[in-house]
Length: 286
Picture 1 (cartoon, rainbow, N blue to C red):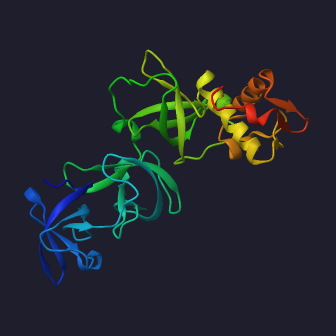
Picture 2: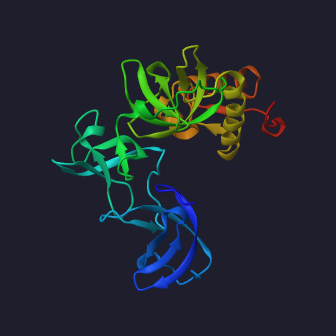
């Protein structure tokens, strides 16, 4: 059985001038156009392809990889607007993805980068996009644990912080107070669950909390010190942006880590910078 809008492993049936015909099961034969047919393909062997509809509404396959498949959230660029139909989005394939007017919570313009959900329209059997994201969130109670690492897609800014799609399923919030720099809609970041509230709302952070954050970071700082001859220019006065760029953590987390190293008499504060003490006696995780 093949699924529209997903990658499928389909059996190749026969070569023809238009390309290679594949066994689409209940969907019938599906054409893989000749421009995608490699000389290494052998009739009778299975091929991994993405199945969608072309500009003439025919089912076709491609070996190209779209920026999003059915059931996924993604940030896509608007490359055109048709006043009768809607907007067209670049999703990495030859045929652009339609964002119908009825699926726009706010009008979009050419050049905009917007976060959308990609789905298969039950009435038309066509792949379309929507910016009405809330309709497609997972409504089951979140089962994440405090401190659990998660993948995030930023959807937009709010007075409290930034909304983010958690693991392509739930909606969470990154608070301004826990962010070193502004974020952009569509940006993909690694984050951590701070808490799942009784009402199902998820508070997020870009850093792990407590010892889970500090212990690995101290090891990371020590390794950086060793590679840099025992000294680093980073300390309490370093900018949040510089710390994030180098260690991928907030300034608060960095200060906690060097505080732990200082109390353990592993580093010396140079002002500016820090220096590693007794480098040969340090072992990760101490």
